[in-house]
Amino acid sequence: MPSVAPMEKPDLYVLARLLERLWREDRPMLRTHLQVAANLNFDVLTKYLEWMSERGWVEYQENGGHQMVSITKMGRDVFAKLVQVMSEVLRRDP
Amino acid sequence: MESKHVWALMAIAIVIGVSSGFLVWSLTSGYLQLYSGMIGSIIIFGIVFLSKFRLKKTSRLGRSSLLEAANELRTRGFWVMEKEAHVNVRISRWTSVDLLEQGTGSGRSLAFRASAPDEAWILVMISYLVWVVAPVGAVLGAVFALYSLYRTKRFAEMVLMVDSPASEIVIDPTRAKLIEALSEARQLADEAMRSIRSNHQDLVLIMAVIGLITGFAVYFALFILYHPLLDPLVALGIGALVAILLPLSASLIAGQRNREEIRQRRISVDKLHGALAREMSGKGPGDGEETSIELLFASYEQLPDWMKARRRAGMYRSPGTWALIFFMVVFSGVWLLTGFLLLFVDPTPGIVLLLISSFILAISYRLYRAWKRKENEEEAGIMRRFASRFDSLQKAIESRWEER
Image (cartoon, rainbow over all chains, first blue to last red):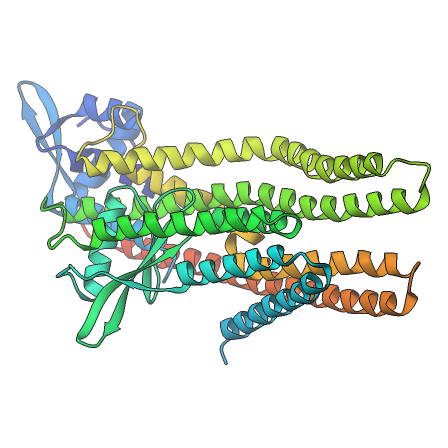
């Protein structure tokens, strides 16, 4: 991983976008593909992936010289929780 | 007695009162066909929109079957609202249906009741206006009611007479939650858009009433003041022109003001609809395209605007209350005008009519104020609940950030 300044507090919105992109993939995803799909610049993406990797939400794999990234079981749980949150927030009848 | 019963009683009293007035008038004037058309339509409306019709050939029973059907319909893109006693499904712009449980001699069974979206009730009110001036309005109302019954019957049979769920596809629980949240967000966005459109319709309807009353007033004034100098047909033409121009100009002005806002809301609705269709087919967004969770976050940010739009829409949100206020204002307006004209002919009944109509107008205003206060309090409560739910649930998510 290239070294970038650590992140203080991530933006929930960006985290959600990245988790969703990874959640949809059955196989590890190319970092560059994730960058294009999530429409983030390289530094921001790196910071977020680093932050998520520290918490065990994503993991890296090398494949033919390319760095791949995939979501872990814990990452899937966090995304499921996020969707649950939004579903409950937008429910009109409490 | 619950408040809704009071409203119902008041509405029934007004209908009986107005009908009695028409009966007396029609018996004395000879226009009995107008009165019979009105009664006929009220009976047809009552049968169609208040009766529950049992579905005989279904093995689906119980509240869970209704909720199951609601979920199936939601994933098929229908506008579904779960209420305490029934599930309301919008079939088309002009028809909706209540699916419900009904007690029978041999236990419980599923039933349906014809209903109508709020725009349709507005159409009925307009047809009532036509009804006041021509019996053809009653025919329009009756045709609408019977058409609603036909559509809702076919729809209920299609949905509830299936023995097993339509879809056997197992959906990932997270995707199912996404579909549920997108569906809910789409309904909120759609409601906001319809509320803005409804404001426009409310204004046109109110102006149509004012136009009708003003048109009559202009006609009578010209007829009385310039008789026999002015041809009665010319006076009638001027009155009709006033009656048409008022709602038409109001519609044009309001239309221009609301067009951009409706366009913005439609973009949100379309995006959410597209995402919903995408999730249902198991596909993901393309590169750079907004993801489902992004759309849900965006929906949350737009909630205050959506709520504001809803708050501004009176008739759309509380058609019953507004129908009551509407009829009270229409008839008190007509009586006010009649009372004023009678002052020149026979002052005593004129004064009585003026007093009665002023009293009804005052009650209408009180009803409006009470409704407005209640609506404002409810909306503030909804917004507080949305905000507190988001805060507490965000904290629950953030607590996981600390877990390494």
